[in-house]
Image (cartoon, rainbow, N blue to C red; front, side, top):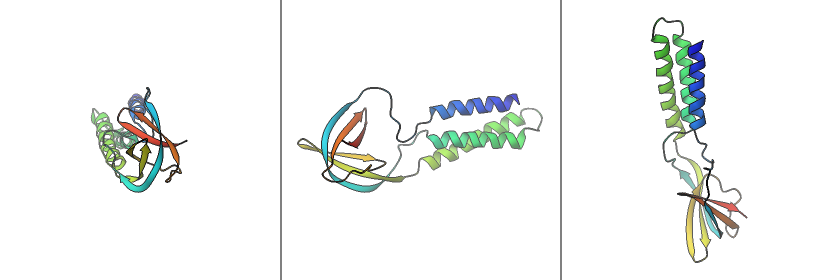
Length: 144
């Protein structure tokens, strides 16, 4: 029972580290105004790394490994939980890093054109005034 509690606690910690694709990082950035000139459908290739699928896969794999090996003696129970968690996390990460539909938004900011790739058009179409929200290397077009 103690192993199960430790497994779930570790899984919770991993899940807390996972970031959803539309999550914002804490901190300041800057905003510019512009007008949408074009919106095109594209496939977004995630940048890799850990994602929600990694945490969920690790949790499911750990639970499955524990369930299959909890009646064994010695270290086999812990090893089954560990191997299941690692395998589940790997599968979850690969599924979470698959390309998914998104949009390329071309925004006119004063005298320059800016391209932004994001998950959703959120009602954006040519002629719509937008705020371009930037934080580090990320940007998102948001209707005013």
